[in-house]
Length: 130
Image (cartoon, rainbow, N blue to C red; front, top):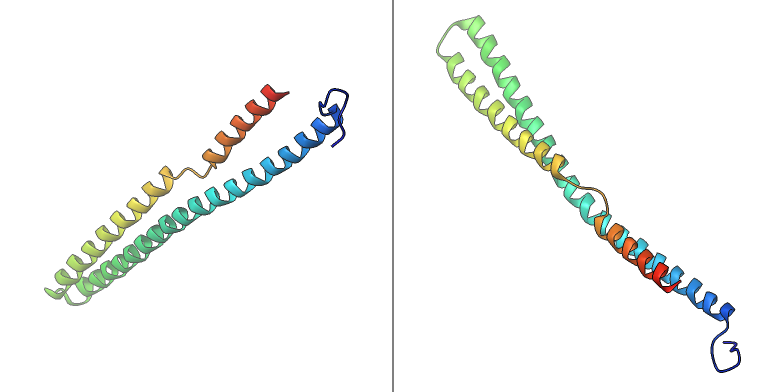
């Protein structure tokens, strides 16, 4: 490090140090953003799986309701009532699962909040140092 008279570092040395420190800071912020986004994406995948599971169960309910309608029209016997009850239960259960997944998706915040907060703090420190 080149020094000016009196043992103080030169302006060039100070800017060189600042440049290295800012580079390190940027790399650390990128790592933080990556970790934060990975965590959010994992939660998002779970919520999407719930929506898909709910949709599959609701589709099964729909098929049972269709079978009940077919039995009703074809036979007009008590067998259709059993199929209708099973279909209604499956459709209701599927609807509840899908609604739970959709609600969780709506509440998910994908912005890397911790990284943004940290960057704002870093900018304040750099401005104060300058």
